[in-house]
Structure formats: C-alpha cells, structure tokens
Image (cartoon, rainbow, N blue to C red; front, side, top):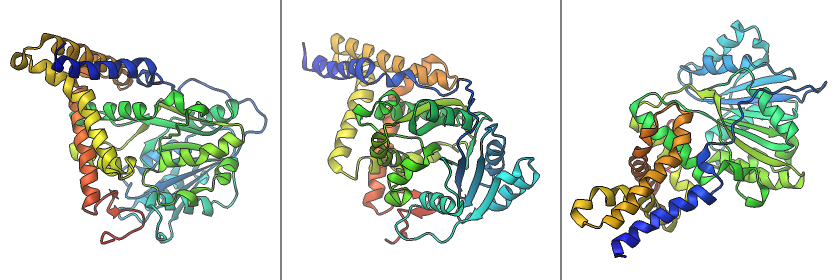
Length: 394
C-alpha cells in the first residue's frame, strides 16, 4: 500500500467510526414533533422570557406564536427589549394589544447592562427578575422564532413524563437561498456531530448541550445551579447553560434532553454568506477555548475529514494512485450518506450530500477567521457589541 493510499485510509476509517460509534448523530434524532397530551388536573406554571434586540421586522410573528400557545396551564410571557433602535418594543406592544390572549404578554425595556454580562443573558436575567413570581418552569426563547401552538405543551410533557431538568429544541432554521441550502443543514449536521443529541440524554456520557433558541428549564434545578449569574459572561450561552445545569439535574435524579423539530422555525433569513459567516465566526474560537493548539487540531481534522477525500478523487490523473482514489471516493460517499437525514429534514435532494466537503471547507475558513478576529480584539461581535459587557476598545 502506497503512502498516498495510507493517507486516504485515515478519513475512511474516521467516517466508519463516526457512522457506527458516534451516537448515531447523523440520523437527525430525536425529534419532539409527536402529538402529546397532558391529563394532569394541575399543570405546572411557565414563564417565557424573550430577549429582543433590533427585531422589529420579526417580533410580531414571534410574539403571535407565543400568544397562540394552546398550553392549558398558567403561561406568562415577558419580552425584554434590549435597547433596540428600530421600534421592537412598540411593535411587540401593538401585537399584545390586538391579540385575544394579549394579557399574557408583558413588554419591558432592559435596564443598563452591568459590566461582565453578555447582552442576551442580561436581558434574560432582567426579564426573569422582573417577572416577580417564580414559576415551575422557565422558557427561554429567541425573538426570531415562530413556535407552533403546541410547542410548550410538548416541551412540558417531555420534561414531566421523562423527568428532565432541561428540554431544548433545535428549531428549523431558514433555508431558502443558495447559501442557506449549502451551509445551514451543514451547520445543524456539525452541531449534531459535536454534541450527539442521543448522548446528551445519557448522563454517563458527560455531554451537555442545548440550542439557545428554545430552552425549557425546571426552575428549582436552575436556581440550584446558580442561575444566569453563574454564567453571565458566556458567549456560547446555550451549551454553557446545559453544562451548568447538569450537576443539579444529576443530584435531583433528572436528565437533559436536546432534540430537533420541524414545527418551530426561525423566521429570520440569512442575507447571504456574510450573515452565516458572522454567526459562526462570532463564537467558533470561543468553542475552542481560545486555544491555538485546539485551533490547529480542528483545522487539520476538518481538512482530513472533508477536504482530503474529494481532493484525492479529483486529482487521480495527477497522482495515478487508484487505491487512494478508490478509498477516497467511498469516503466521500459515506459522508454524503451521513448528511442525508439532515438534508431530508430540510426537504433538500440527496445529491446535495456530495457538497458537504465544500461546506466543510467554508466552515473551516470561518473557524480560522473567528480566531483571527479574537487576535485582533474583535471577537464575539454581535449586533454592534463586542465581548461580554466590554467596550470595543477593551
């Protein structure tokens, strides 16, 4: 076997492992879309807290979805305007005034953000504190998501029947433009590979993850874990929250749940490659703990898994190693097969699986750019803010 064939064998073996032994992440499961019913006479109380900054174009639809919830128990909604500059607060108030269930919704403007707090987490904390009463569950959800009417019922049913401290959903993201079709299903696929959803539910695995757009939290376990104060500077707030909650959940004999859904969806499209690039570059280097060695390992690993197989196939006329090219072709087909369930989740044709290497190369570039921004002091920028409660100069 030539040295080139040996190199081609490495990603082949890696993909065999990922398909067979990595939690079945590629199956795009579990999903929380099945009909449920809650027959208990007394249903747990829920307060939803929605942080919103410059969301005027989508906040009415998002608020409508929350107000339309068919949950039979006590539900209050606190929407916190995080110093928007586009009329977000006024649009939300108008929605509440004109909706039959508008009394459920309270719209507040956040107080000035203390130093050290990330904007979203401060808005959540302000809304949680302003709510007054402590509910049985907190529901943290983003202002650019439209929830199906039975979303909360399904979340609470999962938490109650399976004794979960946290139930989180990866909602259906916008996937209409060409760039979205290439990169959004890949984003969901990579997230599942990093945190296999079935393993999140297995306490022994020690993998804690959540999707920040929709998180239901059991209030007593959340408080026992220290609440938002304990993670106020977290850039990657969702997975940090899950990791924070894991010990309290374990102590109470409860677990975590992370699943997919087709019924709740993001209503904010990504306006081209730049929007998706910004979303990833904002926090990719944070995920690597700002460690240059982890960055190097990630770049090499992504190159091995995604770039090398198609490169060896397409350059066969140059290197002439049929075994290396054959192994690489099988590897390319394996990764396309692995991506298929996620593509079907987004109603995309199976042939797009062959484009996963291209998506992988772009995400590799975004990861490096995330590190570059950090080195230049421009890391974690989002909606005009840089870092956790710091000025751009800091």
